[in-house]
Amino acid sequence: MNMNNPYQTTMHIHPVGTVSSPIKDLSLKAGESGLERQENDGEIRENHQRIKETVCDLVIAKEWQELLDGIEEFSHALVLYWPHLLDTDRRRIKKVHPMGRKDLPLTGIFATRSPARPNPILVSVVKIVEREKNILRVVGLEAVDGSPVLDIKPHVKSYDTLENPKLAPWMEQIQRELEGEDVK
Amino acid sequence: MNMNNPYQTTMHIHPVGTVSSPIKDLSLKAGESGLERQENDGEIRENHQRIKETVCDLVIAKEWQELLDGIEEFSHALVLYWPHLLDTDRRRIKKVHPMGRKDLPLTGIFATRSPARPNPILVSVVKIVEREKNILRVVGLEAVDGSPVLDIKPHVKSYDTLENPKLAPWMEQIQRELEGEDVK
Image (cartoon, rainbow over all chains, first blue to last red; front, side, top):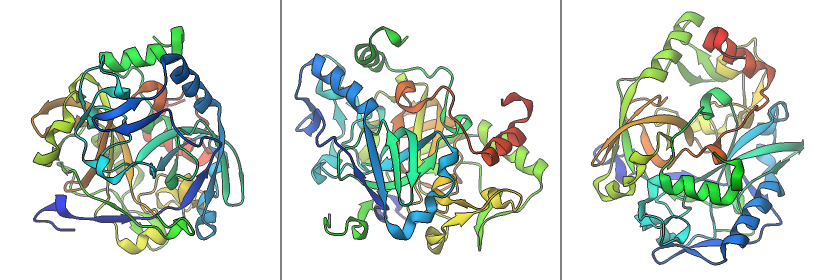
């Protein structure tokens, strides 16, 4: 690492597997000024529900297969993956209207879950269905087919879970709209 | 991306900031056969508590400063960082005894939270204390001083939190030992 200017250091990472999913595209894509909305509210809500229920396979490279040994004993995992459809120049976007909605405030990327970020490493919590050799079947992964998998970690409540995290008002609003009355 | 063999693709990532922390080393380091225990149980528990209460600063590169705008409205964030003290050849370790403990089962890396993994991108949930220009002050980051910061995301309950994740018995055991009677 370049200790004089650590920000100019480059780290190299490599896919350990690939997502095999019926989801071929997402309802949102990174646009000029952030994310653009391509569908109306109803469709977005439907899409969100569909993703939460979708079963997909993480197909791990044979050389890394045994790294999955023991994952069956956990119910949930964090999956780190790369949004390979994102254009490289979108990594320089600094602010977006969340979900491309002009009614929500222009917000710094680090305060959003936008896929367009300097290091587009996305984190998703999934439910583990089963593991068969080099394939881990999961539910709830918000990644399109073909996305490179970077890492899998067991979800551990005391590391990853919080009682009552406070959200920005715009995020509360999105949550209410996506989930309906279930979300407080 | 090399679509014929996606596993041979290389992605490039760059630090967006650096951790400034009073924690100069960790009680565990990656050893020949995984993680070795350097201290006794009492010290490990004390160290764990110390990390949970430690305040540290994420010093973000000036060019990325405005990406933090809006983070103050959230109480917690996910921090993605790189364990820069980890030897590069440790990225090829396939199994470890969790925390270097021979009494716990030899387990695939993807079923552990070991820092020694093919893509050593670590994820930690932190409490946000304050933001001052390019500095985000947080509590609970399990990273040593000088660790490169890769990404910051707001913690959103419906994305990141689960009601009752099931853990492997060995992880339940570690949780009980670290936390005492508070953990069920």
